[in-house]
Length: 120
Length: 173
Ligand SMILES: [Cu+2]
Image (tube, rainbow over all chains, first blue to last red; front, side, top):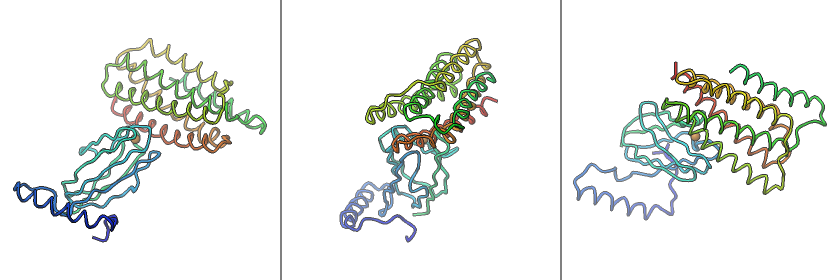
């Protein structure tokens, strides 16, 4: 997965453990839970800029927006998801669908980002 | 709408004209006052729209304006306090406030779709004028780095509001 964000190597051990645990629970519950390798990809919002602006994810990953601004923002896809990100807070979205989505902020449409979700 | 737009333009032209004399460049205390006044004007216009409009999109937009401009103005007040700068009233601020008050009384005589259209079109024109003033006059004239940075972020917010207002205006048609 060369296009994905780098994972902190210090976290590898615990991540692996968590993922095995996750998989275990998913199997135990017999549900189609997030794939065992699901990651959380962070996007920081600072001074009305999403960074990184482009995120490459896999179905099952979670995207987390961390809003450092004093203003509320949204991550909105026309005809698709609409995530509210309050001032100074963060918000998460599970990317469960394979898609390539351009998103923007409804309050400040000059803020733009893109998420590409590949198959699991 | 034309009257407010013209008046706002005149207010910023006043500033532009005085800029031809380098010594008359607006000072940081004046810039802070102009920026704060510009925010207050938009809050007051929005509060009027929240009261008068019955259109969900228009009221939603107006509430967004109140929330954002209150947050920015609070940050501006915190900054001037920290920098020990006292915002200084000036001809540009006064002309802006006068134009805004004239516009508010004009809008108060409208209602329904006519009010919505006039309010939103004003918002587009007003943010456009403020953006031009920020870009060409206020930001280049600011000498304190933190004030300049606040104005630069303010410009991005105002540009966002302009686009948002344009979208709401398009939906009204
Ligand atoms: Cu925003």
